[in-house]
Image (tube, rainbow, N blue to C red):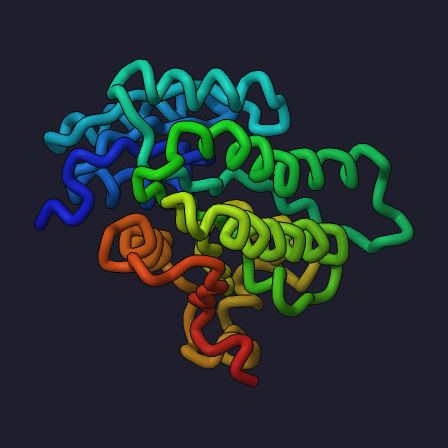
Length: 254
């Protein structure tokens, strides 16, 4: 621990597992106060408990980011607890793969509600508390926001929207003390990818052949994404806004 974001108040959505959990833990380890939000309140609480057990500062809240009022209340909760808001990590997401002409209205609506509207709601709620105080918003997109893969048309559309949302927010608030960047992970070993893996022949097959599409030759770890988020949250990234940060093991270099 070096205190790279000491005293900063952070909100992390989707903090109950995977990249969100690793990010919440990393931010707290570097001195942040972290509100861990997740649609699964028990999982969010477990992350916060782990942070506190390690000596960090954290609270938790059950939040469905597709509900704008719930997102507003989440941001208000963080501000009420710690008196300010410095970092928002819009990480919550869903990945429901399928053959496009067979995808139901419900899957389309849920994907866009969580992956697109959820990030919009988060930005909208957070921005008034960050104006003119060097706030940092980090949206978690995907390599599929830049390139697509089989069975991911709807997911890719939602993640492309995350990239463009980031650029728009960055431009609108560049002179108002808010930075907004987007992280695009490649294949990371988290449960959100498991359904897609089944459509590709199973998780073991994906990992056995991963060097065919992710040149580094292995899946990423959630902690590796969390390290990049920490950098973007810190003042070390003070010149970065509107950046699309690919953390993809070389996938898009091919």
